[in-house]
Image (cartoon, rainbow, N blue to C red; front, side):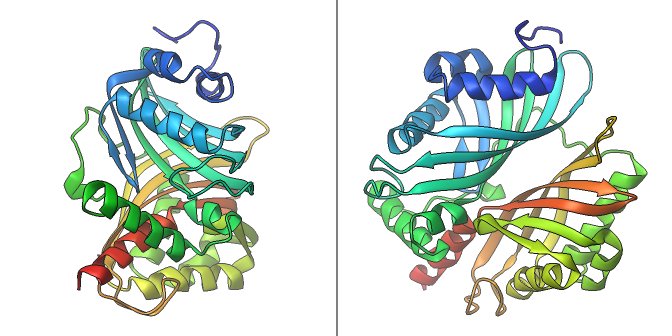
Amino acid sequence: MKGFNDDYETFPDFIHGITHEIWEERGVGAALKRYYADDVLVRAPSGILTDNTGVTAATLATLNEFPDRQLVGEDVIWRSDDDSEHVSSHRLISVMRHTGGGAYGEASGRLVRSRIIADCVVRENQVKEEWLVRDQAAFARCLGLSPRELARRQVDSDMRQFGEPRFFTPAQDVAGTYRPFIAEDSTARAYADGWTRIWGGKEISALQSLYHPGACLHVSGGESRNGHADIDRFLLGYLASFPDAEFCVEHLMINREPEQPVRIAMRWSLRGSHSGWGAFGEPTGAPVYVMGITHAYLTGGRVTMEWVMVDEVAVWKQIVSATLAQ
């Protein structure tokens, strides 16, 4: 890999390795300076960071609250344009104990498990742009809260610190140099088309052909859904909450490797209003933007395993904020 750390033979090794250097090995500032650009853009449902200093501060704050944090890497789905630019979608589980005070309140001593997917654009050993989605609903439930309760606490905290609630919307985005990639692959396109029919066209029957009858979906809150009927109920919860939502595939890539299922990473978005009864309760009319990242494993063209990563606490923050402003 041109311009990359010689300690890592492959790009997935690099992604797993620098994560370990930053967090478990406590490289923090020095490692972030080495592996993240000074003007890095990190977009997450909770907000956007536009420089290395902000990323370092956020990392230190998390370690103060969860000092024993371990990041268990599950998979890296990736692509390369040439020897110098690589794009990764890194799925991992954060396992840690809440032993310090911070954004999640006073130390509770509770064990927290939460899944994360991070999409990174890397050039010559440095992350230039990142899209990061964490399952904060799992955080909430591990800490004995509902996602809505945690969202309300975060809104109150934001109001005290900044005078307004903080969450990411496209209006706050900063232009980067990376251009979205959509894989020219029949399987990847069929997968994205299936999602577009369901999430964009509200054609729920499309799940029959997209998913294997025994498919397992890992969803927000650290929960799973199994089989067509269970998946149907999960989909209805979202679609009913945001019936006018527009769905967009932002990024799509696919890996085919020996002794592996076909693996797809897709970043996507929903834009609409909280105008129906569903997974997010009584409709409020709040405008909502959802940044989502999904990993899927396919066999014979059908999904057997899928990870649907949405930060439901950030969705609730938008709903709570709009309600308080009324």
